[in-house]
Each structure stands twice: as C-alpha cells, then as structure tokens.
Image 1 (tube, rainbow over the protein chains, first blue to last red):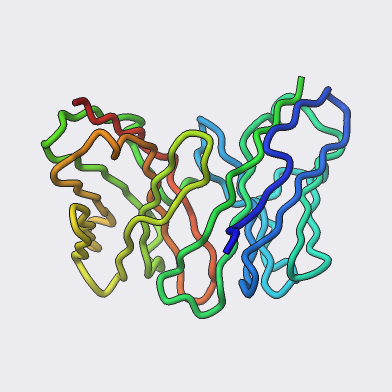
Image 2: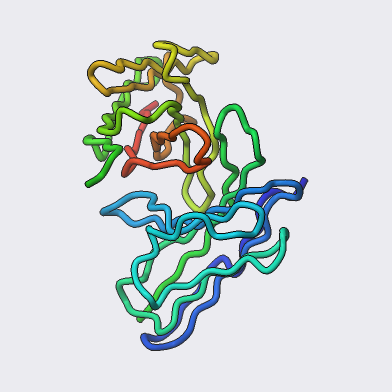
Length: 115
Length: 112
C-alpha cells in the first residue's frame, strides 16, 4: 500500500497567486481530512469528507480556501488568492469507516511558502 | 478556544530516562485519545491510543495514562532512546465524528 500521497511536496508562490494542493487517500478509506500545521497552533483541522461529501468545514480560515473531493481517490485544497500568512505545512489524512481506534493515516505534507 | 492543549513546547531528557509528555483537554465529550509522533519532513504517525473508559494503556516502552476527572492525559516513554526525538501530538475525538482535535505538539529531544 502506497499510503496517502500528496503533491506537490513543496510549493513556493507569490502573494495573490492561486495554489492547489492535491491528495490521494489510501484506497478503501472513507474519510479524508485536510490539516494545516503552524508553530503557533499546531495541527488544525481545516475540513473533512466522508464518502466524498464535506462534513465539517468549520476550520477553513476564510473564503479564500476551498476543498473538493470529486471521487474517492482524489481531493484538492485550493487557496485563491494566497497570502503570506497561509505559509504552513498542509497535511492530508485518511481513515476507514468503523475504525475502532480513530486512527488517521497522514501523508507527507506539502510545505507552502507564500512570498 | 483550544480544546486540546499541550502546554510544554519542548522537553529534553537523557537517554535511558523516562520521558513524560502531558496533555490537557476541556471537552468532557471526548471519548478517545491518541498520541501521534512526527519526524521532520514526514507526516504524523499513530503511536498509541486510549479509550475514555480506561485509565491506562501500555504498548512496549509507551504508556498512556488518562485522568478523566482532571481532563488530563500523559504519555510515558521508558526507557527513552535517541530515536524517540520527535514532535509528539496528542489528539482527542468524540464518538462517531471521525474527527480528531490535535494539540500544539511537544518537541522531545533525547540526548545520548
């Protein structure tokens, strides 16, 4: 099993540009989560999906952020327009339904730098 | 309004000694708690968990203790090894949401 795959691993962009982060969850997992990691706030949940449907997007910072899951094997997180304060590491995670341990499997992350 | 808090940003211990990482939470509805470990340039990986109906869970060198009345959990690593040097996140969940709330993380350094 390849695990959760994220691309790109690193992204450097200028303020005002659109950024799209991509995630492929583990096959068979029904839940997909997007997190942001910063020094100040640690790991923040941005949004999560169950069976491709967004369940909770209360962590999305503002309208500049959007996420989609068009099918069970692909999700995107888009920031438009990007700002320097969006610089962080963004993680995607997935988990199976009925997991007794609530364990989530994380991808390697995308380090975003907005200049 | 951080529901899960790790008040110690960092901890340094000597190899072979015990490492104790602490975590506090505010939501009494949390029913499952987890610890994740993260190395640089990698995603967090699951380490150990505990249900709210238990007060202790042990897995090799790692033990998690839960004190529900104090809304406090801790991770004990005995003996600590240099390879344990990483960022440790505690997380909590409520039944059936599938959602984890993470703390800010504690960076553990184990010195040889």
